[in-house]
Image 1 (cartoon, rainbow, N blue to C red):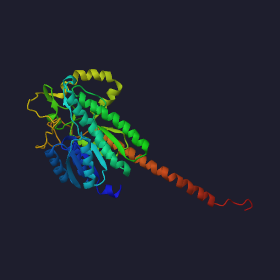
Image 2: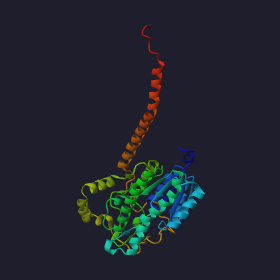
Image 3: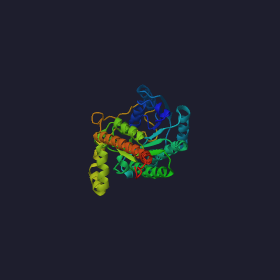
Image 4: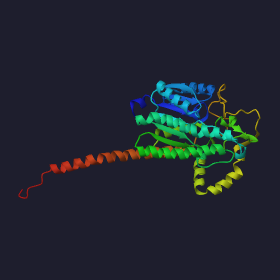
Length: 355
């Protein structure tokens, strides 16, 4: 660990005003890191800053920025380094979505979801790499979803964006590995999470939207992001048993999963309660500009605060990392041990035959 890291890292989080991004801000803050929180909603951002300060962040700044604007993202990145120092970790989490059948989504809406949920990641990562690559240091964490592999009905725009992130991330990771840089990018595939998005996502569903059960609290997702930032050598992480089951099933029998989701995917994303015409949506304008909604949505009574799969994966990962480091020390010591053995053997004078 460098002195810079010991004094806390500089961490940038997009989509930080609510949900997973907000929970990530608190997780990094608890370690004393310096935080730059990026989002569109002023009230949500200010609420996140207050919570991060109370949690122990070294310093926190809020930057109102739409990540779909590459020039604005570049300006934000420059401000971060001027006020907090070199960026060590960049977490991409900002997104937008539309809940509706594909035939009911306008081209303008589809473009907006793609610009925020996919191109926003591209623009932010480019800004981070322009600063990390010359220093040969830094970690970028892409917050993904099981939807990055398995598209679901009623979320065609969001499914397309997450699939795009997955393919782009794989290509980028290969390029970084080929270049020999120590900068790393990794991706965290999330399950259904209890966030405020289901109260403000643009929707044309007859009933109120919900995450597909089982639902996890955003703190579960934040722990995974924190772990990924500390262990970026792995290409991606899966969070929650439901994510593992979905991705394995899709790899083994995708056509069967198509039919299963055709039967269950529409109802499982709706609560049974009629959608209200007055419900807001944040596709083009932030809902949390004047009101802070926090990290959690309205599913606290159903959401899981722990993931046994995550706990097991992290413990196994720690054991594997420890074993690899131990093996590295043994390998590093072998040349010296061999040289010492040879030196000792040469120092022994062979007995004279007449002695």
